[in-house]
Amino acid sequence: MNEEVLKYVKRLNGVVEVVRLKNAAAFEKRFPADKFIRVILSEEGKLLNTKQLSEWLNPRLSKNMVFLVGSAYGIEPEIKQKANLLLSLSPLTFSHEHAFLLLAEQIYRCLMLIKGHPYHHE
Image (cartoon, rainbow, N blue to C red; front, side, top):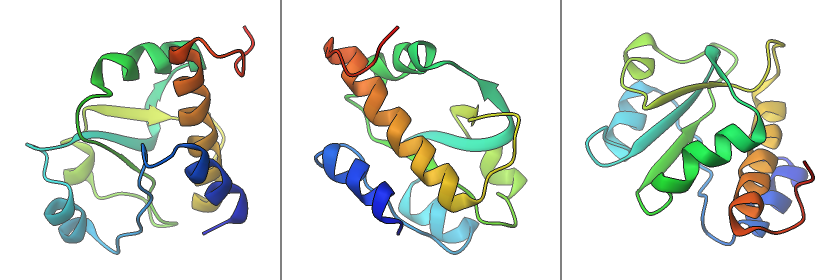
């Protein structure tokens, strides 16, 4: 895991768990759709700004939530179909390492925005 990602994960104080799973079966077993809100990063996902993402996250923070970043080969369609939110970070394509970093920073930024902390400047 990239050092920068680990810095953000540490800042999130256990709010976010970062795991790497090898395939759809492992994901389904670890994060069943009936027990987790699933946010899946996908190029065809919804583009949200930080404020919009924080507004989407806020009412769901008390529930189990998982964010899935795919590998270089993408994410299986059957997993995407069970997403609560298909999220795009950008119209650009990123490596999964960069996507992890961007996602971790955005989750942190969203949580700071929800708490009213001045980290996020509008």
